[in-house]
Image (cartoon, rainbow, N blue to C red; front, side, top):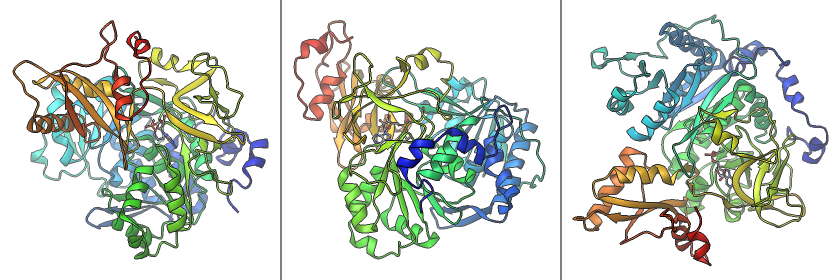
Length: 568
Ligand code: PRX
């Protein structure tokens, strides 16, 4: 029997109070995610149970019980406090998927700080934009990434502390840098956990939009109420499960369901700190007897590409439930997983802003391959008209995905950007920015994004951020960045560029520009193709028409361009 039981039955009587009750939370009282994920689980008698099984890319394994996690996260919290970091201060986590990242996250929350996880593959410019915006006070990082921080430090007057978790040679540390070894820290048995309440800020996750700089979606400790119960009902986490979430905590899936959801449920999770490789992924599942697996369509398509033979070399019989998130999960991938694992991947739809799963396929519910499923009980979701924002009553008509505000894990604002936050709401609906339709049976079918944001391998990249960075290259006069189709990553970045006088388009220049962006922003933002053009299509007022370029890449009907020309 799955945790959710019957989805239809749960719909009838679900209230968020069910989650509050299970977590023994009463309104107005304290709620601290760090405490819920470690101390509470220990109080429930699971202190000796494994919380984390971590494996490095070299095969090194480290294991931590819930009690060890409790005293180490206490030690981190105490250390941060000793450095003068106060509640409400932003503390960035800029690390690969090492144990210090996971425990650092909880340590920050325990002392009342706001955790700001950033993807460790970010280059200097991506890092700078987000640290400057959040006025981050401290950053926890590794020696392999500290160089990127050093380069931008002079422009970050608010950044007071750089904590390096693996630099043992103190003489190698520079200005503002400190060494903190988590595994060798004195365990702290008692720490006065910050008495956060429901609306106390907890996590700041940066996400990209079509225009402007990335925005910090600000979450609060009360998000736990959603994350706990969705992890329980959708991922079907039970006491004896071994759970593997392949997402990096630099992105929201890696925190909501790679830290908070599973640990608040007291479940053991595994982390593999290495890139994608089909056989090592299968071996990881076999070795650790993974039962529940939460991954992403790009990874599933990459596994599909490696073929069925490699699957047969491993014993994957421990697996019992599979879920996916981040981009459209194509029907072929669902059918394939059923064929090779005997289990279908269950698609889930949500966003950085929503903080937890919104539209999902549930254990026991009929899966329609290619559909994102139905709204989580307690979530009111629909599609609204593209212009009037009124709910569309008829099945099969494409509109914008809209959710009734008020679920516990909803973001509370964009950091210092209330105006953009407000612009996300129309007629009392939160507008996700995605297009979909709903069929006669209430299943949601994803159509595409409603803006120019590119979703590459399940990660959002903003075209504006890339275009701005391109302009910093000496050869680039103008640019337009769009997504182009890719069989594995769904979309990859393509840049159209006009060159400054004196520069000629060539393969060599293309590679130089690609590398320039990779270093400045990230490998995800790097254009996979650059087309040098004489001019870019523009509206009458001079705005570049990205949508026209995008439509060409996707072989879509462009239609009447005169409307686009006026489209400012
Ligand atoms: O466009 C949708 C796509 O990813 C966006 C959210 O990205 P982000 O905030 O980075 O969070 C990703 C992980 C929660 C959405 O607006 N997206 C997410 N899940 C799906 C999806 N597109 C299609 N199907 C999904 N299941």
